[in-house]
Image 1 (cartoon, rainbow, N blue to C red):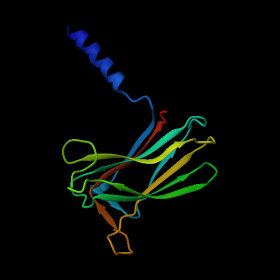
Image 2 (cartoon, rainbow, N blue to C red):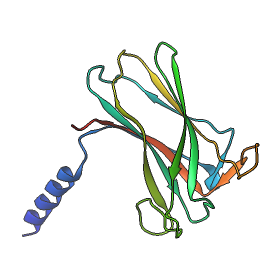
Image 3 (tube, helix red, strand yellow):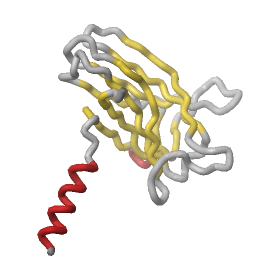
Image 4 (cartoon, helix red, strand yellow):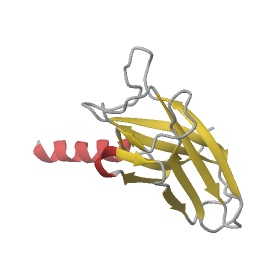
Length: 161
């Protein structure tokens, strides 16, 4: 009976794995603070040059994050040195303050769309740089130390039709 249960558990674990994930990587932010000058860099190599991919920016926040949205600057650099830079805004909570991310306890993880159906047209190393671009309303200068962000990562998956 015990061996049947173990076999069943192994099958469930294999079935629950997402085979579409090509790469998933995180950077942990010291003391849950994201400094505006802390540009997080992720490298992608040996990417399929035919298949379409989706890229997500994953953000983990805790209850000390004081805002309902998050502004991020993301840059994708190709092996030829071409840079595509985007300023992105993501909702992090509902109007009543309920966090939109998934997770139990005080840490919530949000999977945020970055690029959809992108083809890495040439082989080589692609680089994604991510930085926070938060500002208080009416202020030109940005927030230097953004509290409440514990980890930032990227996830690259095969696009699904």
